[in-house]
Amino acid sequence: MPLATAAGAALLAAALLTPPAGAASAPGADSPAAGTGIRESLVAGYNFEHPDPVDPARERDIGPSGTTLSLVNGGAAMRVRDDADPRRGHVLQTRQVAPDVAGNDDWKAGVYDPDGAASLHAFNGARQATVMGWFRTTGPNPSPNSGSADPDDRYNAIGLSGLLTGDSNGHDVRALLELIDVKGELRLVALGRRVDGSASQTFAADGDWRTHLPDGQWVHLAATFDFDTGEMALYRNGQALPGSYVRDDDPWALAGEPEPDLASATDPRGIKIGGSFPQNTREANPCNCRMDDLLFLDRAATPGQVMAEYRRSGGRPAA
Image (cartoon, rainbow, N blue to C red; front, side, top):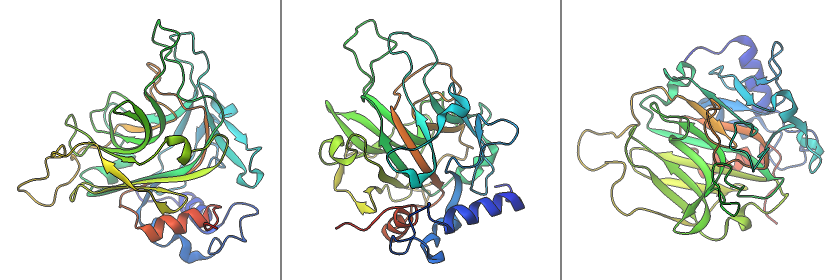
């Protein structure tokens, strides 16, 4: 992983040790200890308060990797002030633009490098990973399938945030937080793929996805992945969600030697946020959503670390 620049280190410290405006009353939110463990494993992060000074259609990384995010199709207009929770400051708006047109105009964000994003090298051969952030729906989900002639056809997934594999076409992922169809029912899931080009495993939260992501409400979600043990977990507002694995075989090929089991020794081809194909070659699974404080860690965050990050970034303990 490249060494953090002085500017990057300053961004990281400010992001992890300073709560959003108005959030200081949250227990633990203003404590430097709230970021302990998260700081050490953070690779890339985005709070949409740091536009690239040269190109405002790009967002600077608050993590040490320096992975600049592209705001695809909407550019700087995707960085908005939130009306539901003004203390959040600027957030990312993603959305479907033209449901009746098979084009490439959906608002999404991401990074794509067909040779592998060297700045994301921390996930090359990684043993663990975490994807987390704040999400709020701002329109109908799932969206109409713009690639289908059937006006009633809708996408079978709603893209939130994920890390691509080392051989991804812009859709296949190593670690993903998403809403996806599981046996005919849309569910909140953690979806992981240990080996490039091989099978994925899905951990699906129990219950209807709308109970986890109610219309118009900000919710903190996290997904953790342990490629060695095969364990995945989902969290909502700092609390672990009950759920189950979709497959009961060994899709990550964990049985047998060698040990430990690691992700493929390839640099991820990038990050996708609010939909697939960040290189903008096609549309899929758009999210009519707002997002904030998106973090990508090269360790599986512990329950305590997830709760600490939830509180630091503006959450409150459950009543």
